Image (cartoon, rainbow, N blue to C red; front, side, top):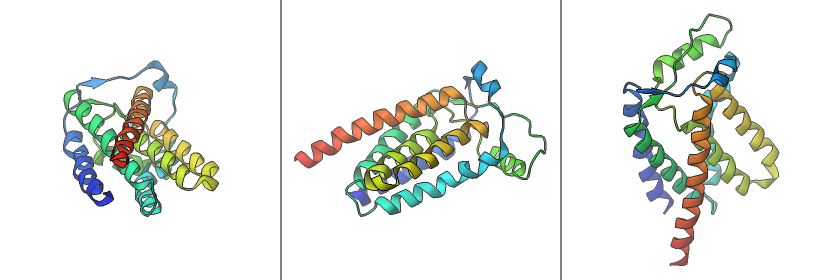
Length: 191
């Protein structure tokens, strides 16, 4: 089952790339977004997020949590891809004065990762799902896990990759996908 879910997830997740190349029509910046500073060092946890997903998959692969984890990712990406397709939205990027060693990395990220696909934030729903299932599989590491998760969540704001409303959308996608995956997984086990 886990291989089938993985084979569904990979192309679904890959839809992010062509959708990210489209022009954004909507920008949902709130006044609070202007008060959040750009903190260049947060590019490190932002980029390590991608390696973290792979690590979580490896750590959960032989556990009972891998199928619900993959199913949750499929559901959350399905929600996001549909939203991104029909409501292309993004984040206006700030100008980047060269203020630190990490600023060039943010500049490269802005070039590679277009300003589209802001809401819901995939970084948020994926990070929360990783933290949730990793906490179930490794409860003795829960404090460390949620410290890392919190840092990644802050990184999307401090790198100016997302607006606050995108974070809320990511949290909603996480909650919906987690609950739907639980219902679907329970139904499959009951068969």
